[in-house]
Amino acid sequence: MTVAPGTVRRSDAARRRAAAGRLPLALLVPAGLGLLFLVLPLVGLLARAPWTTLPQRLTAPGVLTALRLSVQTATLATLLCLLLGVPLAWLLARVDFPGRRLVRALVTVPLVLPPVVGGVALLLVFGRRGLLGGWLDATFGITLPFSTTGVVVAESFVAMPFLVIAVEGALRGADRRYEEAAATLGAGRWTTFTHVTLPLVAPGVVAGAVLCWARALGEFGATITFAGNYPGRTQTMPLAVYLALETDLQAAVVLSLILLTVSVGILAALRDRWVTGP
Amino acid sequence: MSADRPLLDAHLVADQHAFELDVRLRIAAGEVVALLGPNGAGKTTALRVLAGLHPLTAGHVTVAGVDLDRPDRRLFVPPERRRIGVVFQDHLLFPHLNALDNVAFGPRRHGLDRRAARARAADWLDRVGLDGYARRRPRQLSGGQAQRVALARALAVDPALLLLDEPLAALDARTRLETRTELHRHLTAHRNAALLVTHDPLDALVLADRLVIVEAGRVVQEGDAATVTARPRTDYVAHLVGLNLHRGRGEGHTVRVGAGLALTTADRVTGDAFVAFPPAAVALHAGRPDGSPRNTWPATVVGVQRHGDNLRIQLDGPLGVAADVTPAAAAQLRLVPGQAVWAAVKAAETRAYPAGGGPGPG
Image 1 (tube, rainbow over the protein chains, first blue to last red):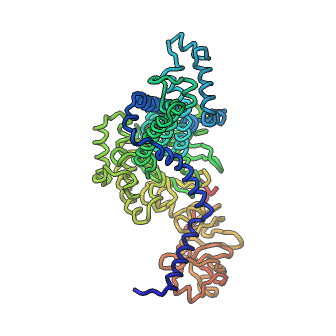
Image 2 (image 1 turned 180 degrees about the vertical axis):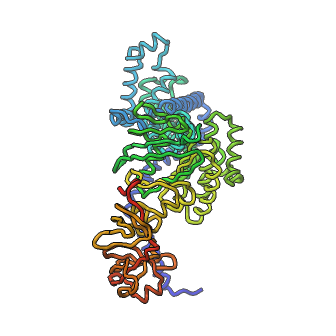
Image 3 (image 1 turned 180 degrees about the horizontal axis):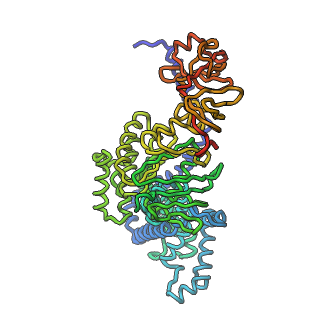
């Protein structure tokens, strides 16, 4: 096939112009830089990983313990957040009560509060001499600080707003006429909530729970302040990374790599299955 | 239940955006009533009040002798405890349930176990001709199928009163025709009362035994289809049924309608009266017609539209009327806007009736 050189050049130029028209450079460049900024540290982690000694390091006694504790506490914290956060989100989305805007602002405080401050605040309430801590200890014999339960509490405190915001948004977006249809078919309010409202907002709840779990898994500041850093009891992966950083950089890299793999793996699996559904 | 007491007895008074709704409704067992009116007339508010989705401010809702909403006695039965089923305009089938479980939803809430509820649902899907579609999700159904599932879902709990909110409005013309026929079959078989809310006169005429017409929150006319179509009482109803309607003073066989024009009518009527005649009864002439000098007046063409095989001519003059003429006649008379013509109506084709003695135009 013979094509005149002029024709080719013109069609190429036209194609370039069309492409440039669709993808403005002013957006492409910062977008690329942003992606690079987010990905480079991960590349650094992979580049510096001690791949040869990896098997021994992975099976070192403290590593698996910290990983198991992290996954367990993050999962428990997510369950606690679901149990309390979904009704809270419903309250904010559906019940028109005075001071609702203030309550909504209060719910999001842990998002902007430095986690260490959150840990201090938790100590002031649930600590041995805290507002509720003394009473909890004397009445039920429950001591939260410096315990595994304390880790769950600290993680829940920091992660719950993610769930509440996601679920509240989903509830606001849900068509309430489905609930009316359920009522005309004889469903009471609770049945309507469990059988119609919740299934309708399920994608939002799952998305919120995933975010909540990821935030809990990475929680550091509130945990170390409120629950301390006891291996096997309160030392989660982020804490182990921090501790390892002071003694053995390579161990810190390995721990970070594991944390990265677990969180990316689970997020990717859940996203494909639930979050980006049609 | 005694035979003379209506299944539904309601006086609906409720606030809505522009005006107050104030409508009295009585529906007998086995009767299908259409609530017909222009958009924003308060039809949907009336339906929501009956279903318990919107509270009354005054009046009452009584179904089968049981009070469901009585603001004066602070009595309000929530929607889930009323024996009232609703078919919504855009079906509102639960998207997370398949067709069978959508229909089984009501029976489950009424105490049937899962197996019995599904059996009843399967039976209802069969009755609406969708027995092969039980496993389909709502988004896998066509608009007409979804509306039939919605009908099955509402009927599966055997409601004393069935409410249908523009059930055919969201469908395309062809599906509409089929679904209307299907709906007619089920409404005829339904032993209890049904209220159809619609702005489509065809739906109302085909499906309902009786029409209640509301405008701006008030009943302006009610009666069977024959009466309403023959004797419209408002411009809206006249327009719906395609009649010219004028109000004037009856003096025997003439009705004086405005500026010096008296129409001779076949019917005898005295006092405040309506005159109605179809557009096809209006003949147009280039000059003043000879012979019968009665019922003719000079007019000006203000609009020309296609209307079936004919043209519908809007006329201005002492009487604003619509006239249907053949395209040939229109060409011969050069009927374009601005053209002066003479209009004539035969007395035999008019109908005159008193304006009093019923809800007048409001």
